[in-house]
Amino acid sequence: MRVLVVDDNVDAAESLKMLLELHGCVAFVAFNGDAGLQAFMKLKPHLVIADQNMPGLTGREMVALARRKQPGRVATFICLSAGSKGTEEAACLEAGFDAYIQKPIELEVLRELIGAKRFS
Image 1: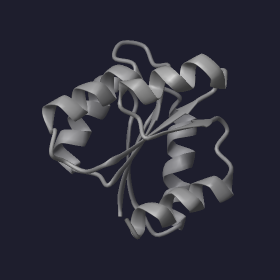
Image 2: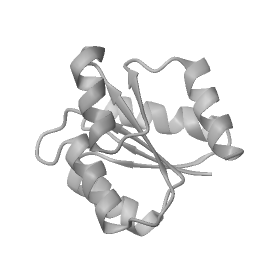
Image 3: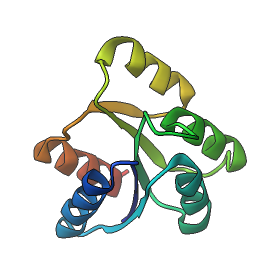
């Protein structure tokens, strides 16, 4: 399974990439929304885990553009954010994310995401 991690926090992105690889995924990273959108178009990942708050193109903007540019493409988009869950979660889901998870991501939640995507 191909997974794209998009986060402007380089350490967080690289750490999540390593965890995904330990769980059998082929993982890629992008460190801003523009690079994330380009990687999505090129790599065609099955799962995208993106930070919501990034300078430039935000996670919400990136996902909305990805969905518009490839409307028939099936990929799961997960918003990973350190923000408060209430209003931000609704905005992320409205923008096109499939789920919202608060940072730091728990290992069990990551396993569930990977498992659910493998069998969907």
